[in-house]
View 1: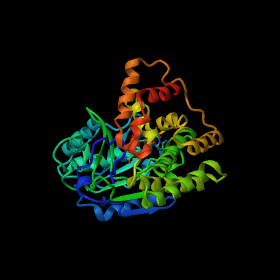
View 2: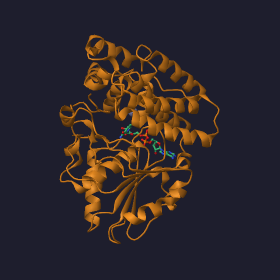
View 3: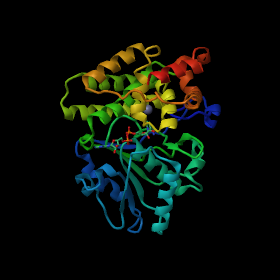
View 4: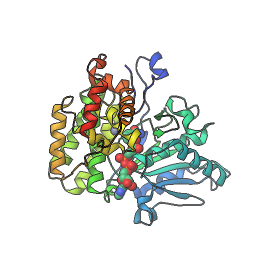
Length: 375
Ligand code: NAD
Ligand code: ZN
């Protein structure tokens, strides 16, 4: 079986020699409301010495907010606030690594990422590059990382991407958007505190939540499906339905979407995403449209591929009172369309998962253009 995720368009070197992939999982996880307040105790035994700080990479939406004051700083620990307005770049990772190496004489005790998929991916990448020779772009691909990363902790503040469980970190590099896929990428510790997702806007809650829903639909309807992926995918789907179609109280919704994200991430670890992700990467590459909303913009037009999934998506969208923007592709040039189509068609494993080995029989540039024109 081929196992690939996200923008990953090249064959994994290990997949050729192993019959089944041997995946790392997050070894420690704490779940519960206000579990964030246990962070100081969790980090304490991991402190190497007083000169080796913890570096907290935190979404700048929390700058000056109560959460920032609850970060358990000691000795020369540092908080670096980072904007999630743009998805993470390899150059941004290199800048952060250089800053940390210049500022401190010892390697940090660890990196703690606090935020959504953007901050979680950045934190994983910084932890990996800090201990390895080279820049982030050198490790984009499969199993190119030679040395274990420094201890790193992921603390999601919005639910849906599954970045908290995955062994990849998706980065926009000089040449390509591609993950650092390695056993060393996975977090050493995750703190799941549903209360941290309290401030998320209705729209963003939906977009990132739908990333999880779409992971489930693409995994469960894919040709790579197996019992491992199915078991996680079905649970995540059930939780998404509860969250977006039933009358749960906000606190229950936060708990359930956080666990849906976890299960959805586990589901695609052993399978692959599909049509929506392939087309969404085209939008992201050309127009910088972010992952969650990009997937929604595409998915609404995929009835042909996922009839039941799209019907349910529309129900959820209506029930949540979400209006997706339109006219996104209205003024694009021929060459713009060609760029997006070529990016999308390059996602071979995604198409193969969605439609089988003969996917090229039905997926043509004209077909993809007709979908992009609707967006
Ligand atoms: P995000 O991290 O980009 O954040 C979206 C918005 O929500 C930002 O404006 C952010 O500031 C805000 N936000 C986050 N938490 C908040 C809170 N508690 N209160 C108020 N605002 C808050 O969103 P995302 O959808 O979680 O992540 C998208 C990224 O995840 C993309 O870069 C994508 O490539 C990546 N991703 C990674 C994986 C993986 O396995 N590594 C999987 C899927 C997606
Ligand atoms: Zn996704």
